[in-house]
Image (tube, rainbow, N blue to C red; front, side, top):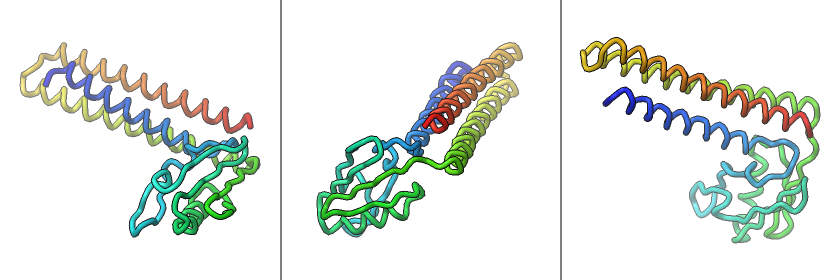
Length: 186
């Protein structure tokens, strides 16, 4: 493996880490109704854990209401139970196969909690990026030790990895700041 291949591999891993952060941010409640809030929700249906989207259709009826149309009436209670048990702090109301989820405006305390969650997720992402940097640097140092690359190439490789790390940490910070701004502005 060459230094360029290591950098390309690390860039791919850092990008996946950042995309994961964006996905987690999309699931955070900001006061506006969004079906992405329910993306990771699992429901006990047909004797197994299934994604909510595999047993129901999600829709936005207004800026504060999500509707969940359960396909099989026998799963309505399980879906409602999963929604109540989620960490979203929601109170679903079932009307036959249709479940309505009204999202109240966020209180100041809840907004502050959400900002802490955002900062925590961003920090986890930055730690992962730094760990990826360490792995790449270790690979480069090992190649130098084995004499497959010279000191100059090793130094350039480590410098390039640091630039990638700085770039992705900055992107994580920017994403966190944007999400906090979104939470605050509601």
